Length: 628
Image (cartoon, rainbow, N blue to C red; front, side, top):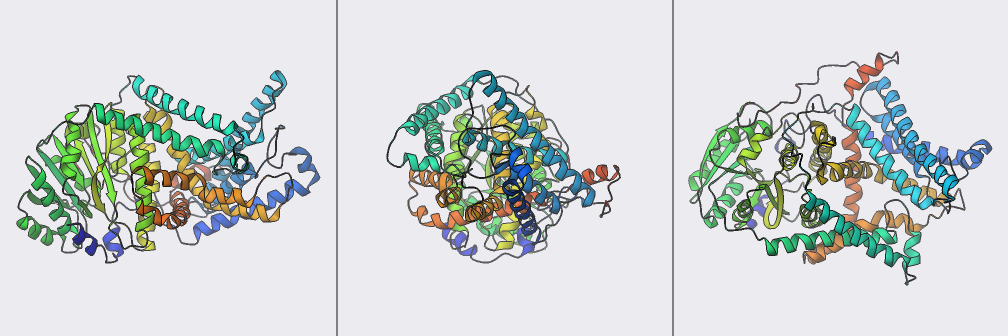
C-alpha cells in the first residue's frame, strides 16, 4: 500500500490540484508578489544599518544611548547586537510592504514602533528602580532576550489586533482549574531549570565558550540544557502515564469523512489504504467521500475505488459550495456514529492506524486523537519534512500532551468524538486552520487531546517551490485566524495552560520565524562591520543562531524516537528552517489590512488604494446542522 502511494507521489502537481478556495480566504488575505519579502528585508537592513551608524557616530545619540542600543538606563556587561534597533527597523520594513495603502502603512508602522518603545522603556524604568532602591545593576544579557521576546509578541499581537481577521466566535469553555497540568508543567520546568542552572555555573570545559554564544536564539548554556531537559521530562511523564493508564481495547463504529477537491491523482490510493486498515478494525466503518466542486475525474475514480473496496462501506456525496469546511460539515451532518475520523484526500493511513487512534476513546475525557505523518520519499523537501515532524509531533506534541496543552492536531488524519465536534460548531469556513480551530475549541471545552506517534500515515509533501509556498503561507497564516476567532481564551476566566502559555508562545514563535532571516543577515553584517568593540558578537554566535538550539532539539528528538537515518537529512533541515522563516515572512505580508486602512484614511492621511469588495466574510458553522 505504502509503495503504491510513494509511486503516485512522484508526479508534480499543478496549481489546480494543490490550491483551492481555502488557500487564501477572501477579505482576509491578499496576493504576495515574489519581490515583496525581499523589499521588506532590504528596507529593514537599510534602516538598521543607518541606525547603527548613527548610534556610534552621532555625538548626541552616543550620549543618549551609551549601551549601543536603544536603552534608557545603564546595564552591566557587554551587549551582543542592537536587538531593539533591529526590531524597530523590522517594523518599518514590514510596514513598507504590508497591505493597506499609504495611510495604513504609516499608521501601522508608527503603531508598532510606539508600542514596542513603550514596552522597552517600561522595562528600563523598572531596571532603574531596582538599581536605585536595591543597588542591583541588571545585566545586558538579561535585557537582550527580554527585549527580543517582548518585541516579537508586540509584532504578532498588533497584527492580530489590526489585521483583517475572522470574527470572534465563542464556544463552550471549561472554567475549572486543572491542578494536574499545572503541577506537571511546574515540576518539569523547575527540575530542568534547576539542573541547567547548576551545570551552567560549573567551570567545565566548553561551558565558558557556550556562555559567549548569547546571540538571541543561540545556544547559551542554559538554553542548551534547559530545552532538551524540559521536553524529555514531559515525555517521561507521558510515557509513565501510558504505562500506568494504557488505552483500553475500544473499537466503536466510526465514520470516515474525506473531503476531495481535484484529487483524481491520489484518491484511489487513499480509499485503498482505508480498506486495508478497515480489515484490522474489529467494528463497522463507514466511508463518506465528499466531492467539493472537482473539475477532474475525482468523482468517477471514487465510485470505482468504492466498488473495489472489500472491508469498508462507502458512498460519494457532493457538496456544491466551495471550501473544505463546507465539505467537512456536510460529512458531519451525514454522520450517525459517535466518532468521526477525518482524513485528507492525499493521505494514506497505515494498516493499524485506525484502531490505534480509536482505542484512546476508551477514556471518556478524550475527544480528539491524532497520529504522526510519514513522508512519501523522493521529494526535495521530504528529508527536512521528516525531521520537522519528528520534532514537532514526536517530541513537542507528546510533551504538550503530558500537560494537557496540545493546541491543534493537523487535519491530515485525526479522530473526533462527534458530539464534542458538534458542540464547538463543527469546522469554520472562510479562514485558514479549520482543523487547529476545532481541536483547540474542543480542548478548551474540557476534553482531552491526544497524539499517538504509533498511529502513522503517509501525507503528501510539496515537490515544488510553488506548492510549498502555498502550503506554508496557509499554515502560518492560520495561527492568526485561529487566535482571532478564539479571543475568548485569552480572558482570565479560562485558566488552562493552553490559553495562558502555549497560545502566547505560538504567537511569539511565529514572529520569531518571520524575523529570523533578516535578523541573521543583519547579525552577519554587524559582525563584519564591527562598529562597536564592546559588542561580544562572534562568528560562533551567528552560527549558533542558525544551528544552535534547533539543531540540538531535532537531534535529541530523532535519537529519542530511534530515527537514526533521518539525521542524514540534518543539513537539509537547517537550510529548510531558513526557507521556512522566509515563507513565514511572506505569510504575514499576505494578511489584509483593508479595514485598518479605511480607519487610518479618515485621519486625513492620503491613501493610494481604493477599498473594494474582497469576497464573502467568514462562514459561521452551526454544530451538527451541516449548514453551509
